[in-house]
Image (cartoon, rainbow over all chains, first blue to last red):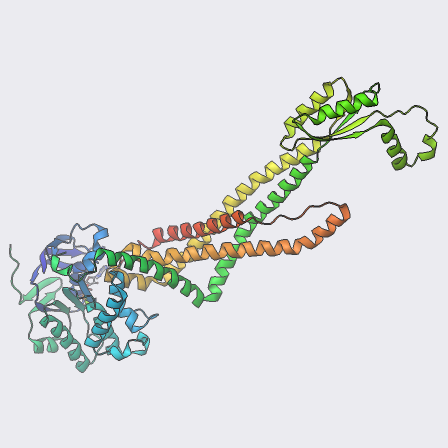
Length: 225
Length: 318
Ligand SMILES: Nc1ncnc2c1ncn2[C@@H]1O[C@H](COP(=O)(O)OP(=O)(O)OP(=O)(O)O)[C@@H](O)[C@H]1O
Ligand SMILES: [Mg+2]
């Protein structure tokens, strides 16, 4: 699903956030990405979601080379990814339902289909009863779950989460992680960046550890040449 | 991407209806947004309307001047003072001849005796003129040129008539008319310049409003881009906002001018009464109205397009 071949990312200003990173996450796998603050976790996820371009090396997402993709194709690639942010990035001027429905609206689904899928996604994260609420009236954990519902509502093949439990207490964190595991169990590829080492250890999934832009630990299969 | 992802994608037809739906939604959404912040919207619309009122007001003024000057032109008359030696029969015959000419609309024959009587009455010399034996006045024909004749053609007609043997003197006062036409021409061009300038101003006003709107919704744009929205999708509601601004601005400016005409028509009527004239203020015709509305709407679309083209593509997720 995701293949990194010797990726180096140098930000303007010269800082090398990723240094010669190679990685192979297969379809249907679930893995954690860890490392100290500033290690390059977010940068790695941003390259997959086409927010940043690698300075050197090749990034491949589902057999598509992300390096020289025309801008007009970027939206369509992103529709295959569900992205979960640490600060959930909800739109506060519309209801929970409208937030979750957004990916479906963008992709042009019929409104009955939109309603059905949106409710199903909200049900999955246990927030169906809050569909008419505004995000501002929800707790942090609930907001994060709305963010997850929005990320999965269009059934993406790949779920990327950047510190989804960063602001949550241990109980809520475990609940959120369990939702990811549920998606993994129905065949979705999942990559979660997280600091929460004890929780990661508990969940017993492959771990990739970054240190100053270099991989220092990798439970995944090596990249095939 | 790979085929398995396309399975649960909507098909082409339902994507088209969805595209249409999104246009409708953007249309209604942008209208709703304008409605939810009424004071800001009203202010923008008012600025646009006032800016539009100037060129369309000038246009209307010009239209009125043109009609009045047109009336004046059609009331242009040539006075023919006939040869003193011409008998009444011959003069009347000559009058009939004139009436048959295609470049003459109507004629009015005034015989020598008629002329004298009228002169006696109007000059107040009445009695004293009774002693004058020989009537010094010639037969006179007042000629109204055919209405399609322009100033030049009227002048040609004048010289033609003057060259006729029956005519002693032909008189026409055109100088002031020509001056008026030149002024109208200058006014016409000024209206074009003013319209262009103020249209540009409207473009900038709407462009700037949309630019601010884009800035205010920066976060939303970033998020929708990350979720996979195309630029066209993100652009749409902003373009419709511009369209609404233009449309409502145009309607309001039309209303302002109609009201102004209402206010002006009172004094205008008393002017008519004083001068026994029958000038009425001409308002916008239906096609004028359509042109104003279409132009302002198009300006709205163009203004928002400019803003969107410049600022929307700059916003990328970080
Ligand atoms: N847009 C940018 N321009 C310049 N430098 C950047 C930019 N984004 C990130 N960096 C730098 O790249 C390095 C890696 O950043 P990144 O956000 O990937 O780290 P991270 O592992 O996600 O850290 P954290 O756990 O704190 O989120 C950091 O040192 C950061 O300062
Ligand atoms: Mg980070």
